[in-house]
Length: 321
View 1 (cartoon, one colour):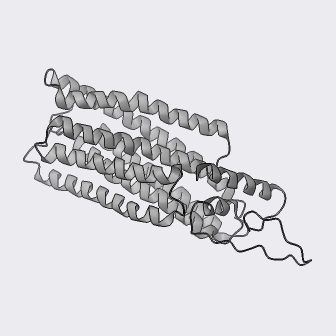
View 2 (tube, rainbow, N blue to C red; view 1 turned 90 degrees about the horizontal axis):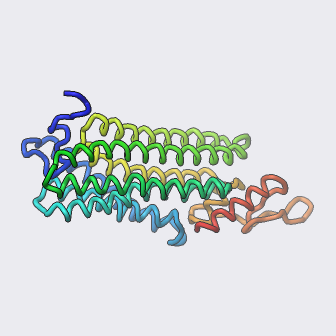
View 3 (cartoon, one colour; view 1 turned 60 degrees about the vertical axis):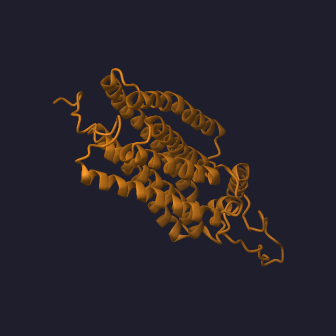
């Protein structure tokens, strides 16, 4: 059978419950759903206990994407696949979760760009891209989702339409998240290079940062591969687990930046220190001639280009914190 007309077995679950005989598949899906909720529970503990102030786009986008995104998305599919709850209820719950989870992940990536990217024009274009993809990809997919699960007439047409739209939206969101991650890596590496000559761990962090982002992109590609292979049920439940894992990795990257730059006079340290309590800066020591060096929040800096970068970076965090 051609790829344009996948077999009903591969599309099992799009318009309702799973086939009763697919016991092994049901077990796998429940495990993925459970792991998704567990990862969010960990984030719910770690994020509030780590941030100094419970405000700012980065803080709330992490929590909202997990609690109002991943959890309802996973519960919605749990209701859809394993209960006899009305389709309107299950589809509405999973759709709210999907909107918040996918768009929320992009907002997390967008908010962290403020730590390292000063170009307001680029930031504004990124925001416009996120808004545009929501309307161009999320809304049509939602219409197809309701059609495939609720509309009884011409149900097969809705299923095939959903199958096509799902591939388009997943490709679009994968490209968008890859772009945002690439921008973040490029700008962060630029800042870390300022201390790479004097601090060996700065260079190590650059490799780790690139490796983590490659891992995140690879996970997105795995989802994309499952979608184009028409393994619907596995793809959509694995998606919740992967997105919860990506949120934990995002948080881990930020913590690693703090750990490596703790106590240093690196621009990235100053940016993160104003948001998290993990950096403790000591008052600037006296210079040999008895004078005090120029400081930013009690932190010694040098004049010239590094001082200007520190000033700009501190301003960026103030705007999102």
